[in-house]
Amino acid sequence: MATQEKTPLFGPLEGLIGTWVGAKGWSVIAVPAPGSTPDGSADFKLIVQNYTETLTFKAVDDPVRNRGGAVEQNIGAIEYEQRIHDFDTKALIHVENGMLMYLGDVASESGEPGPKPMFSIARSATVPHGDSAMILGDAVVKEGAPEVPDISSLPSEADQAGMPEGFLKQYENEQERLTVYDIVTKQNSKIFNVANPNDNLKRDNNGLEVVSTTHISMDSENGGGINNIPFIVKHANATRFQCDFWLQTIKLPMSGQTFEELQYSQNVDIEFHKRFSDKSGLITWPHVTVNTLTKQ
Image (cartoon, rainbow, N blue to C red; front, top):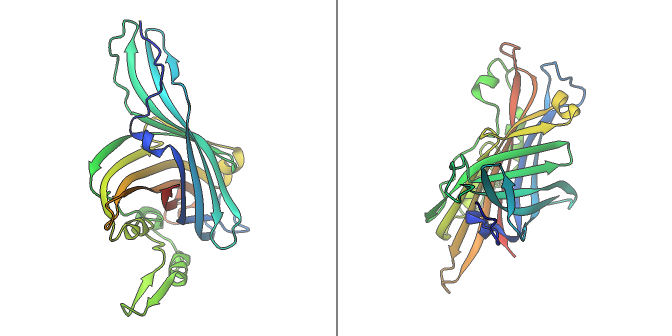
């Protein structure tokens, strides 16, 4: 008969346990403009914020036993809390609670291995806007630095079809606001890359020797989903949640000592306002957040 594990196994999630802090966070989100209606092709408001963050992961002491009759599964669960403050005003702008779960192998009554789980990691998330999400995925461990892909904060080309000229001008305006002249290179330098937020993650690691990386990738389309309160569904519906964590060990050049760094990139697809081209669907607006944190 399958036996209950006495201590939880966290697999690649174990390195997350602890408290992480960072002041390099950025958020890009488009929301319906004041006065707009859900069924119209109206304007939007773009909000770009720099933020500080405290992200705490706390292990659940005992394994969680899922009983399925002829088969069982033990889960290693980690509670997390995320608190985000505006960098300038210090105002609290985001609170999130949830669980990260290492999904153990399925075992039969006889103790023999059962069907292999489709995914090894799950995350549940709840935010006070009235959204809850379940996303699933896997982790890969590799030597060296992470391969951080580009990410776009703008609607797709298909969703941009038929938009009036200058409709997305707010993105350009925000980029101008967050671009300074570098007197050393004598070139303009982006404090934050509004159109491609992941560029900041790459620049945060410039000059660092990354020894190893654990890449945790999760998506609500991997058998999970998002549930929202009626107001959110009607006015700005969150339909997909994707998340990448890069847990890194970094070596200091002089002492040879190492420290832990956590980088993440998250995207929530938000749907509002009809497309200009065919009016048959809604525009999907990426809500991208990125940050680089170190363990306290």
